[in-house]
Image (cartoon, rainbow over all chains, first blue to last red; front, side, top):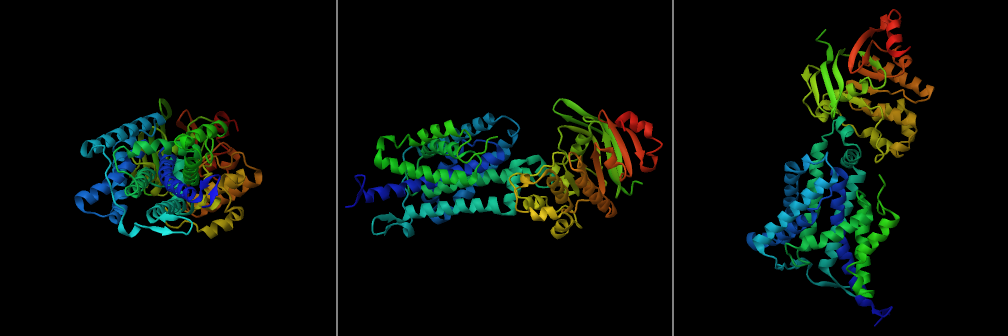
Length: 295
Length: 235
């Protein structure tokens, strides 16, 4: 068997794929955080909990309502987005004029409450969710087996990221969004309903988290704790990429996923901390992050 | 007169946080009229424009726009009634290209200029349409800030210090633009430091001091009221 630095090539590619899958989740989640931070100036600590809600809803949908994966792929993000809109209208909108810290505290509190709610309802044990039939099995690429579901996660995530990037950078709506992010008051004085856009942006940002949650459902153990496990890494990803940069958060998410996967092969002990080590180094040399602009 | 009155500001008070900036502004503008608010720095002229659009903090008093009370409305609703705003700092977006800046403000009325008309009037903007908005020169940015509100069909233009810091040929160009706008029946409120830019065109001038209108000078009174101008503006 072919080896690279003493590692079988199959294991290497396997980890690379796994890294890409993780990176896809990082990318979708940090993209949502970046969009929300850009527009609302709020560090959305509830993001992990809403990701978890997306996964839990997927499971609940099948278990109690008989709604399958594909429908939940649509309904999950919509439900989570609506929860987000309710959060924005009822709570967040009163915090925009205050320091970042208040938004952070509020969303952190919300994260604990959402998590607590699901813990209370379904316990902390992981729930299994089987991969939909169309995506079970694997492709034989010759040098490795690629599970279909992993390929799907990567393709679906990147498509959503690309779509989001396109809308923000290339369309009229995106121009409104960028303008409202840069100078909300003036943008509103041109006749654009900025408060409405802020609300929809938060809804969309958390819907991305919900989408990631649905994608994760068949790939991981669904438990109320899955969000808080992941979100710490995602925040590190956002810090490395730079808050508020769309493309930066996507590229950083994917890149770090791959690095993490590779480190697992060559230096397994460091794989859990490598992201934070990179974060420390990046912060030393580029405090605004790799793609961030200093304010 | 009230039938043609487009904007009436009465007893307008405005605050930024704790500081009380406007102390009962009173003035009215007729449809198609071009007025200028003159005064020293800090007199409250810019704040008056911002207060009309709801961009200050707390406000009291009354702002009647085309027969409707707008003081309680959010900024975007006021703008949608046909108000175009060209801010003192120009407000060109760095995250938008020149053309995206131009296309940003949505339609708020009929009869706005087309993109082609605008490019014919400001050929520089066409040349630089794909440049990042803030990479344009100061003069180009000012043209852009003016041009983008001419596209929207806004009938009331609030222009803040548009000649500030610009080369004489550009100031001259802006003068031509304003003359053209006047012919096309736009209602214009111009805040100016530069008396010589404002005076030849304005139908009436209001002198603002300490957040109030302290004098009104019609175009034909400029010569006889020289002493007033001297007293308040030093010209």
